[in-house]
Length: 157
Image (cartoon, rainbow, N blue to C red; front, side, top):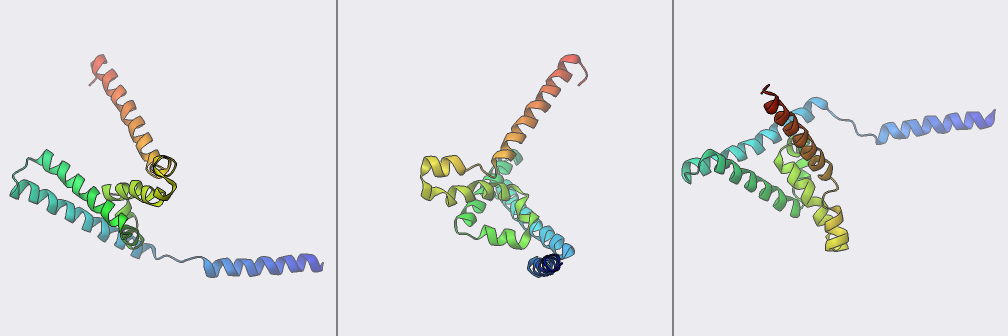
């Protein structure tokens, strides 16, 4: 009887400890921060796009490519200076979902594992986070392309 009471006490103490240590989140505030962060990133992107089209005179397609490249570059630089993780910590999904978050997911492992060498460090670990996204993106585009091709050949599309 003492053993079971002791185990129950330990279980209750552990449960109390877990409750104390588990961070509580304000969902509404997190959503607002993500919205603001995503808006900031999109506003920066729109500013780059406007500058490329209006000031530099590039067409929309080329300006869009430059905008993507510049946003990726900014993200990688901020990751290199260990600033992007702080942005992600504050903005959550608002910083992780856009192209900047994808660039961060490629750059962060490359920076982290560089000390292990170019082959076994960077080469092996660079796509640990982004790899599944790339894999399923390519696979999905292949399947959709195949469906489109079959639809065109059948005269449906």
